[in-house]
Length: 154
Image 1 (spheres, rainbow, N blue to C red):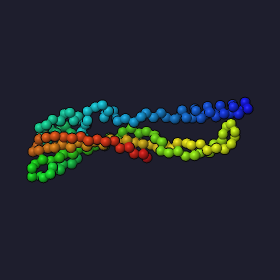
Image 2 (image 1 turned 60 degrees about the vertical axis):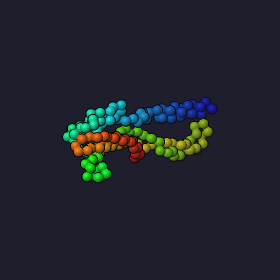
Image 3 (image 1 turned 90 degrees about the vertical axis):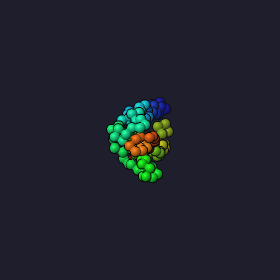
Image 4 (image 1 turned 45 degrees about the horizontal axis):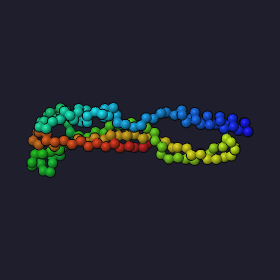
């Protein structure tokens, strides 16, 4: 009886040690350049630098060249939408994607049993940002920023 208790205590200590020895993973959060700072454009400049009435040259100096320029409704009215896009790779972490049964031996009874073991996969977060500027005849009228996070498991 004492021997079984000692084996059980030793087995529990091994399992506890093995469970605590893995790498620690902190919860995901946006990268440092995005956390708590003002939104930025493709060139990395703050959107706070934009102001209504800026010329196209001034906008390009702040945000760089747009990824896309398309007419707003009709090219005849001289209003265009400048679109800036960027994707920033965020944090990586391990997530549990399922469990599997593994064979084990009960240290007290010596019988064969099955235990559930977690299955881990790497998850990467990507932050997508789109900035749309409404330009009319070389002057900035308005802008809109949209952003979302996408998580991919590999």
